[in-house]
Length: 287
Image (cartoon, rainbow, N blue to C red; front, side, top):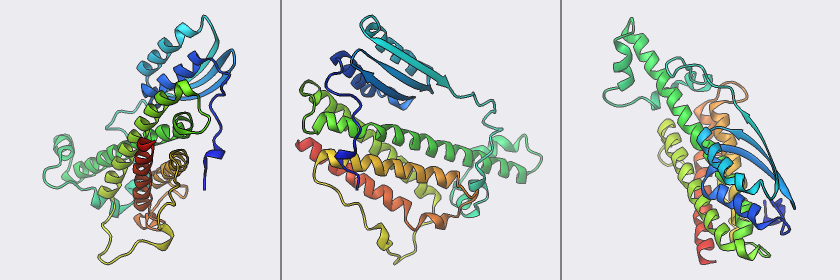
C-alpha cells in the first residue's frame, strides 16, 4: 500500500514563501488542468517544464510569475503539441471501439439521431449515413472519456503534496489552511470527473446479469485512517484507473472486448476510489 512516507516533497521549508504561494495559487486556479508542468524549486528560484495545452491558462501563469522574476531566478521551458489538422467529420474512432460490436450497440441513441440527420442529406445511402453517424458518436464518446481521464490525472498528481502541506505533520504553518482548502477542492474535482467516467463507461458497457456477484479480487480498497495517507492512496489508485481507462480505448493488443473490463472490474475500482475520496473529504473536514 502506498503511504505518506512515499511522497517526494515538491519543496522544502527553505524555499521562499513567495514561490510556495505561487505554486499553491497555480493549483487553486486549476491551471494544472491545462498546463502539464513539473516544478523544480531552489532556495533562490525555480525551473518549470511546461506542456502548454491552453494558451489562456499559460498567459495566466505567465502573469502569475512575472512579478517574481525581479527577485528570483525563474526559468520556464515550454513546449506545445502539434495541432490536429483533421476536422471533426474527418476523425476516425479508435479501432478498439470501432471493432467492438457490443460497445457500438450499447452506444446507440434512442429516438432521433442528430448525427444521422446531419449526414443523411450528404450521404449516398442510409447505410453510409448511419456508419458516419456511428463513427462521430464513437469519436465524441472517446474524446469525452479521455478528457475526463486527463483531469483525473492532473487532480491526482499533486493531491499527496497538497495533503502533506494541508494535513501532514510538520507542514509549514502559514501554508496549512490555504493548502488544505486547495487539496479539498482537488479532491472534489477528482471525484467529479471519476463520476463522469463512471457514467460514460456505464453507458457503453452491458448491464451485469442478475445474480452476478462482484469478483473476490475486487473486494475494495483498504482505506487508511489519516487524511494524508488516504490522499496518497487515492492519488495512486486514480492514476492506475486513468491508465486502465486509456488502455480500454487504446489497448496494447489493438482490440479489447467489453468482457476484459470485468476481472478486475474497472467500474468497481472507480466506485471504491470514489468511496475513498469521500472518506478523505470527511476525515480532512474533521481535521
